[in-house]
Amino acid sequence: MGVEPENTLRSFRHAERAGVDAIELDLHLSKDGALAVMHDPSVDRTTDGSGLVADRTLAELRELDAGEGERIPVFEDVLDAVGSPLQAEIKDVAAARVLAGVMLRRGLAGRVEVSSFHDEAVAEIARLVPGVRTVLIGSRWGGDVVERAKAAGAGTLALNIRRLTLEVAEQAHAEGLKVIGWVVNTPGHLRLVRALGLDGATTDHPEIIRAARLTA
Image 1 (cartoon, rainbow, N blue to C red):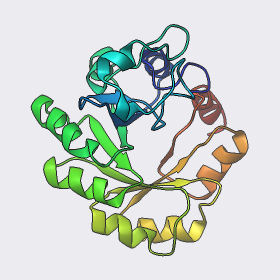
Image 2: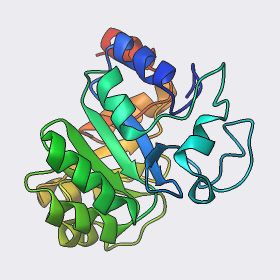
Image 3: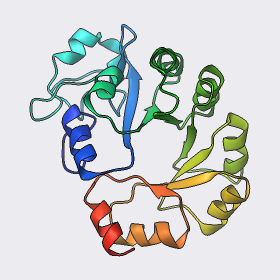
């Protein structure tokens, strides 16, 4: 989203050309049950429309301009537009079952990692899709975040880099969990990723990959 309209096919193609390891996207259900790729529950911030994603049909969502003439894609559009591994974040707990159906039909457990702030969504997708890799996301969390991740069946914790401590990273690693930091958009945050021994990072600026390689 730092260089292209966020959650659009244009942005995903840019990320793929930049050589990212995986592309993160966000999912909400439309009124008619489509997996709309959108970060916010409403379309106000990122399109020329207004209102909730859940109150519009896919056809109505397709009419909106998501930036530079881009249209709101659905999850299946992204699968077909890029070949990179994906990390699909479930914003709406109800989307877990719909996403599971697509993943099972298309055999995506190896390509698509599923993440969510919602423990129940992580647990649901893990139950429905055998072998799926799952991520529990945290912005603010308590001392039980590692236990929560394990209880939900997550293999990875994705935590706010501004609040992530070495203690939490080491505790997670001791329990066999991977840890990634978000959002890493500055050299300072990149240094912190290394200092904490994290397994990865998410970024809005794919060019940070170049900086990471130059300073490795």
